[in-house]
Length: 111
Image (cartoon, rainbow, N blue to C red; front, side, top):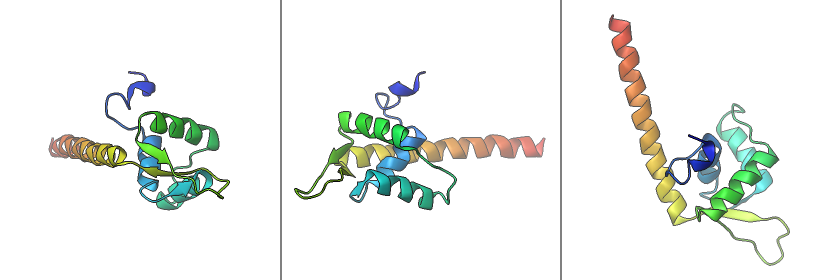
């Protein structure tokens, strides 16, 4: 299934996941990238092109919103309630995937 359909299916790519997670507090683009790197101990780095493409998709899906102040030149975003709900749903989905994988690997060790 193409990656573009993931939001429509109610699933998040890793990039969307991290951006939504970072935007539980208001942030501008560069701060989002920095926060993701700190959060993941530099294991995940999202470049500007990928980030702004994802931001556009998240905006179009009403998962984040623009919250600029009048004098602020930088675009600042925050996750919407709909975005938080999807983030929580995706966390449960990811946990279930991990549990399934651990179960399969545990069975393999016993063989």
